[in-house]
Image 1: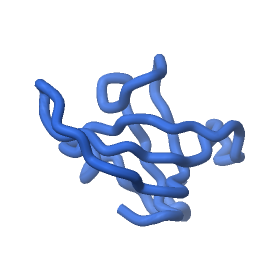
Image 2: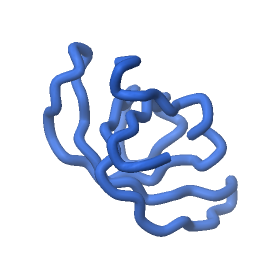
Image 3: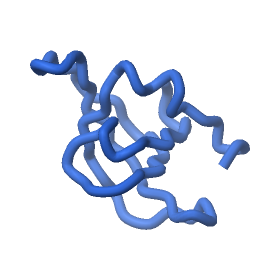
Image 4: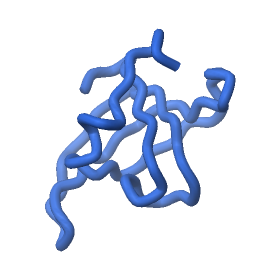
Length: 76
């Protein structure tokens, strides 16, 4: 995962929010081990259903979810 990639996350695959989240990745921060596995802090822009940037978010993303959540911007 790199800046510019997009994550399409289910509610259970990130912390500090409710519902699904589509996030344009701006910055990858540190990784943290929690009781349910590895999580990484990601900073980015929330995208709406049309792919438009909305507000900035910083969320903890479940590392195991990244391979299936990762999209290229052209896939949104």
